[in-house]
Image 1 (tube, helix red, strand yellow):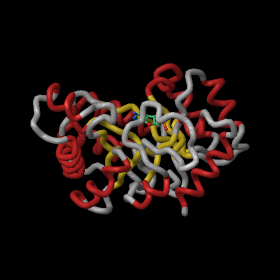
Image 2 (cartoon, rainbow, N blue to C red):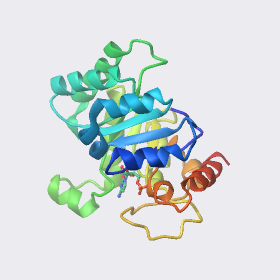
Image 3 (cartoon, rainbow, N blue to C red):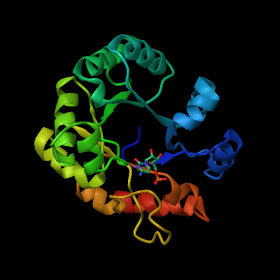
Image 4 (cartoon, rainbow, N blue to C red):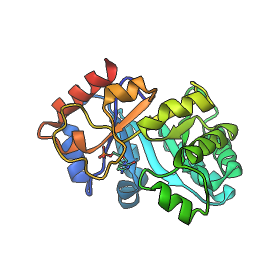
Length: 238
Ligand code: C5P
């Protein structure tokens, strides 16, 4: 995964649309994120195709199951040669440890293995819903820090979180612990906030300590995606 470039969320409903989008970049190696929708419809073949074209892949499947099942699944996904994978921290420390072991088994070279990051609380979860549904008195921030610490204890590389939480996580867990942040809107982005709540710009995300930013619609739905990508990359690198 190239740290100096944003990760483009390829949230398309067909491979044709995804390919038409990627073609505009004329062979540039991109960081891309494949989510559940694309993966469940198109499977490993899609990952292999993107990989063969030289792209770096964050496979965003958010695994959450018993340790043995997650172990076997992460092993299979690592064998595809992806660069970043994720699990739900709520699956527990043991599940996360088994996931890390699966990566080491499938790719013993530490320089080539995918990064494993955890989802703490989904960005769609409000504090009120979390407290009622997860039967807790914790604030969202306390819960996010708790899950980040648990993930680190299990040996994971980092977490997915809101860019506004990166600084807090770095302070509590350590600067080496990676934060991957969606919720990015470039400063010139004119459209509605869509369903992203706690959003910030690429430059602000960097200042707050994000290691990687994930950007979807501001690039994929832009009138000129290549220009939008250039602008966002420049803002991220500044
Ligand atoms: O909003 P945008 O299209 O940039 O979203 C990029 C990625 O951010 C999505 O693929 C999704 O995984 C994530 N996202 C999120 N919370 C939201 C909306 C999107 O984490 N509310």
